[in-house]
Each structure stands twice: as structure tokens, then as C-alpha cells.
Length: 241
Image 1 (spheres, helix red, strand yellow):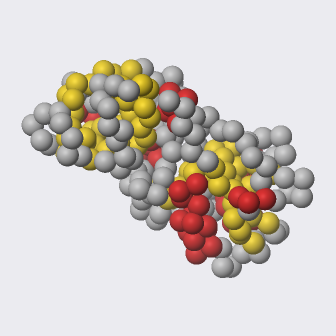
Image 2 (cartoon, one colour; image 1 turned 45 degrees about the horizontal axis):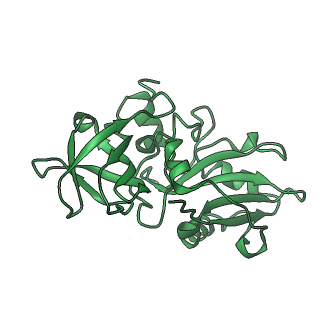
């Protein structure tokens, strides 16, 4: 079952575009060049992810952010809110971009990378989605919005929830953001991403509390309790600064 969510594209043009983003996002925008693609997150002051992006530069040195289509309006509004004192123009140019074929939802999920969509915006801090393992965060750059929370989680080991790859024998595809409960009915996390494998199998990326990371049965939303198979992630989870 090949399902591909389309991407949206946000352009930042003007002499302050890089400087503006450098003070807003988790990655080091100074490393962006015409030959490099970098991934990052834009967070709230409380360190919650508003949206994720992949950044490129075009031939005119405009910065292009590729985002999940459902988050485009949220991302645009969030950036514009902070950009009023910078010489940068921010616009949605999705209708001007050549059609590209991104990874399918299942392919992306199996890389251990979850989209942030409209339903999960402002729900997770970066480390909950393993963004420190995926190279979305620079811990050497200067301050940015939400940096204090992200740095504290890194240096003080305060990450108590992490994303895990699970397989479920289930016909119903969960929705990102859905609450996860254990067999006792206790809330232990949320769905970050989900994809159908076949008519009877679903794979999910689930953010789970550390003490419940080895759970063998879960209930998603109001569905029935289902058995869980834990699958490996293709990277190591950082255990310290």
C-alpha cells in the first residue's frame, strides 16, 4: 500500500533570510549551501516542534523549506510572526515547484523519521522524535527559539520519552497524535507516524515513556488492545551529551 503525502514549499528571500532562520531553528543555517541540504525544526519558546523541514538554496540564494503539506499554513504563520524585524520575504511557492516524488509514508517511517503534521504540531520536543540522532539539532550554534529547553534536555538527560518503531496486527490506521495506553489503561505516549503494510498489518513510530518502552500490548485511542512487535530503528539513540 504505497501512500505518499505531498510536500509544500516555503521560500525565504531577502538579505536577512539566513540570519533570521539562524535565530529560529534547531539546525545551523550557516552550513547551508547550494550543494547541501539540511534538516531542522522550528520550535515554540517552550521547545515544542511547530514544524520540521528540509532546507535548500536555489540559484538566486533564496532559501526553500520543504515541509509536510498539512503544516504549510501553520509554518508560514509561525515564521511570519517572528520575521517582522528582518529583511526577509516569506511565501508559499508550492504551486511553482516541479513535481517531485518523496518517499512513501512507509519508506519514511522505516528510516525512523516521523513527519510533524497539523495534528502533532506543538506536541513533541525534538528529542522525543529522535531528532538529535537524525542530525536535526546543532548543540554548538547560538540561541534560537526554544533552545533553552532543547539544550536542557540534552545536557541534563531530561528526555523521558523517545520514539520507537512498532508493528501492530491491526486493520485500522492510527492518526498521528493519537493517545497510546497500556493494558491497564494508563496513558504512556502518542502516535508520531503510521503507515499501512498490508490489509492486516500497521507499522507506527510511537513516542513512549521510557518506563513503558518495552510494552507488549497497547491501546490506541478507543481501539481494542493489540499486541506489539518491537522493530529496530536504523540508528542509535543518544544516551548522554
